[in-house]
Image (cartoon, rainbow, N blue to C red; front, side, top):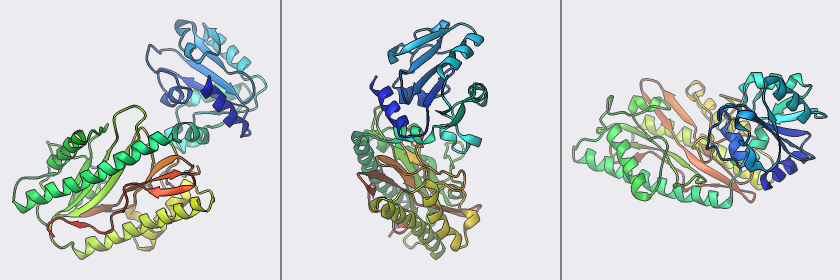
Length: 394
């Protein structure tokens, strides 16, 4: 199987003896995607697939579901009992000293922490050192085909258009003293996505004033807030083209329902935009110069701008996240706060840059753009980035 050969070649570039995949009742969707397995069908028992750096891959399945990994086309051992499973696993790993599994030490990177602690203990009891497959996962799961990168760019262009359409709709309603609210604006965004042929797993964020100080605020019909003259509006929206391989775009823009943006809002947004641009320039320069850049390094660049401006405690989240088939992907995040993401930003990946300042009970400010790395160049999607808060009634 071509994918198994690709994995073996990747392992040959490391100091690892193999990569052990494990699943129980679809506990690791990454294993299915990386191995190219269908997730359909009954899966109620544990299975393993061991891909060594040298030699043939082997599968271990329960007698209850003996055909579960048949599509891999590799030698398959069938176990009946827990003892039989352990004996076969020990045989698989005989001679191996250091292997990767889809786990993260101390859950440092939760996106790749798919294997439970007990299973890791089992493997270690066989005399094998288990290390995180985080870098391998990024290579096989977060690294995109060129067609996927193009799908992201098309989606980003449309999402950027929907930003303008939504702000125009809010401006129209406010100017005419017609009803408009967080929830109605959210539903407008979803209708525009449908009209443009995009889909989203979750609805966008439309947050007014103090609600914008809640990074993952969710509008609802039950607790709706009207948008009126003089209100600050945060619009965070994400969508992609239909299809399992399509890649998301994710943008956040700020607007003010008036003709002149208050000085305090403008000042805080300028700090956020400076932090965003500092991270973008840092990544561009490093990638363009062929110098590796880690996610945590890029985060520190943006965070440093906000800290120097006196808002260290008000920047409560990472600077950016990996983007893939899910809006929050499995590649390197720009993060030295929530986690310490040591992974390098690699070619043919996509990620957001979205610093923010949040003043609880008052207002929040965030500016988000997407970047891709392709052929040694880091570029902003749907450029240009937002430079100032949009005055809707100007």
